[in-house]
Length: 382
Image (cartoon, rainbow, N blue to C red):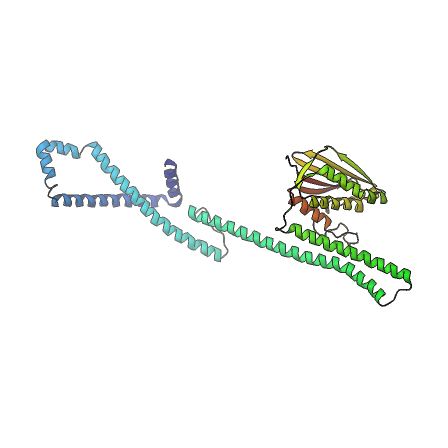
């Protein structure tokens, strides 16, 4: 109660000048005096007209004497009660007058804000009452939220345009080659069966690349969809990594690459979708074999740190420029700006989506000829 009264006084002091406060207090005091005087006269009138109350004062004087009656009227406690009553009524009138003043000020400031908005001019907040300040803050938050929504919509539109552009480019390239080679075959422009088989193999290779691109595109859009739900299986990451290494061992031998496994723990449990986690590390393994074959070695490590399973896939060879590292996980992004490298440009984007769907984080570092992709996934204690 005391705190609210202090806030009330402070609000009045902020919104009104000293002269306005004095005038309002003076009006409130006189309004209370007049009101109480009127009530007093009305009570006298009622007493005079009442059969029961008529002559009460005279009977009191007859019984106790005029001196006691005079002392009673001029006693300190009765005078105190009288002035406290006047003060209480004055405070009520002061609140009423302040409410009228604030309503008028509110309308005035709303007009000023409206003019400032129409003229695109700033508004001084120091002169605004708290209600207007709260309203302006709410409006500003709405503006920021709206601006954020518009920005997100623009980003989504730009992302959609980029997606269409990149998909069109990556679909058109192998499709153009397929149509070109098929035209040679269709028009019998090959010299012999050997050349026919060569064209057929080229068409088959391009068709496989086209099929891979469509599959990756489908997987990426499915992972980005809010309707896609991942499973929550209990996975042993060390066992999963060993299984993947055995599957990629043959491809590594063909490229004369040695896979080195380094597991700091034997049991690393993660809750997630087994198929998606496998896809995640398949993409990272394929990426390491594709771009790190010249280094002749791939390191696979796993450890536990701060409640997270940390898996690293490292390859050796040409470093990735620092300017390209933050964009590696964007869809269709390739370090090779001429887009001549094999791959759909969606593998790392899919990997990022899978990790984030599992509440984790993935990033890449590249220094001193070593490129490392680090995956962090929350450990399940159960």
